[in-house]
Image (cartoon, rainbow, N blue to C red; front, side, top):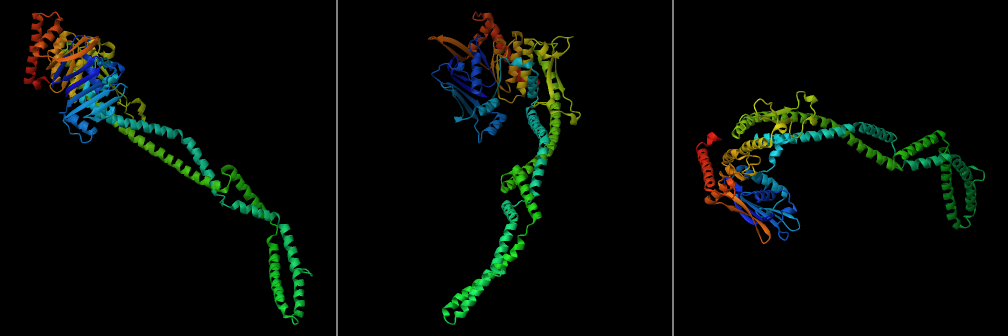
Length: 577
């Protein structure tokens, strides 16, 4: 529950501290006095967007603090899920807005993010605004109300997560399917290119080798002529080099007996003859090796042309061609995996669609059961609120999921398969029609009040705030509204702004909002009323400033009636609920 609220430099509020009690806390005050500023400050504290209009004095920062007592297991569990090692029974939330427009958020004096602030705020307080009844005619909001009463939010969240997964999976499948034709063409192209390259069995230095061999073959006649000439010159001709060198050696042998120093020269000549004979034999043998081979030359030309063609398509060198081939293999494998992904995505989507259908059907069944229960309760509440012959029903139209194969995800949405429509008729003999088409403002307000009472009982949020709950409601119904609020306040802390004395008389704590001017400045204050002051305030609410003993008597009767109701309720608690 909210124990204390400190507000500084907020709109018309300078500095005030408000202490709250358990049960029903009522704010009253004349129109325009600033009662809704208190609710606005609480909204600001819990994370609502700030504007420059809330700053009273531009030279000071806006500061709001709230002290909350945690005596609700649901709330404590929710906070522990968001804050590690949290075990306090009291938390202090602070929010400030400095002169430069920067916000600061703190929980128990530790900095927190605005998103965490909002999450914790939703656990602690549920604020019902002045214009909330206007949303009651919106079918989407009606669905939210129905789910809130039936405590179906967790079921809807579960369904929504599965539905979102299915939608994303379907988008992926469409993308993969749309790309399938292009992917198939690309796979065929990669297969062709890889096969074309690999079938040639390229070697890294092959081109140099081929060009060298082609050059030799092209000059084979020239080479053979040279080899034959050299071979003849060395050995085969009558006047060959070897024959003449042998004659030289023979002549030297004739004189070595005269001078032995020529023996070494003779030996060199003999060695040279042997070497020249080896050379002559080698040249003679190589002549046949360089025979002109037109078939081989044609093969080489074809091979070189093949390589040049591959170069024109895949790279400037054989190394580039081989690299392109390896890269194409990698890309081909990726595309093949995408085909496998397409198959697996189809299977996953099929399973997700089944899960969506089953979960959606389950949510629909829960809603139908909840709608019957809520319709009965609202009819009873409407009778209490003065619409004795009113009829109220909740129509749920659901998409057809009989044929699972024909089920289209787009026909559903993240909230389920259902469209909810609140149906209403205020007079006997009239057809029941959608609430948004026929109900007056007063009737809508009463229906909202009936809903709020039962939604509040189902709400696990400890503090419920109602800003001007009596909008479009006359005093005759005020007493009933007061009773309804009193019933809810037995399980929740209620903070309520009202203009009606009939409602104010049920307060367990009555707070009055005042506004006054001083030194050309306007100030808003809040005072907790004593028993006597409360009597005077309710009397003033009945007749205005011209109070009389009669109005005071009426005020006292209202307060006593409220006390009697509270006492009766405590004795008959089980019966009344």
